[in-house]
Length: 150
Image (tube, rainbow, N blue to C red; front, top):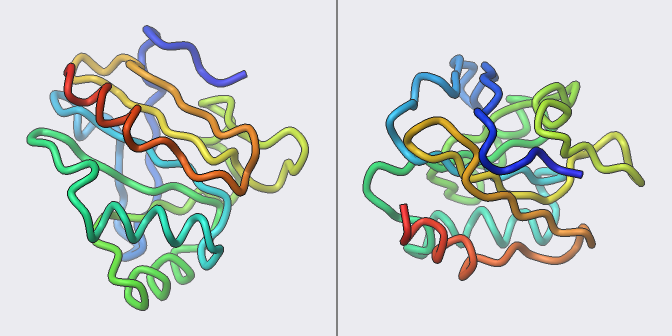
């Protein structure tokens, strides 16, 4: 079961693909979209991250989008450069952040669920979307509907 909506977002700091610290609370006052995904270089993860970069599916004023997976910063850097991904990719190698958000995949505990967490400007969890079947892509229309209301 994923984190409950309405709760304060658990803060965290992870490294970006460029080895820079990225802290959630540094973005307080903006809407934040956390895109948890299983692995770099996998077909659905690639399609989704490239879609976010190449189409205006999540382009909203005062909104920050980041991808989070267990892959290393090196993998993130190579993947981002090779595929032209524009948003930051955060390395959660021990799945500590995935665990804080209760998104470690129960059937495959070495990856996170494919899931999206929207945090509102008040730093509360506004929306959670979990793809129960890992190969299924997330519902961007549902996410756009949530962001349209914020």
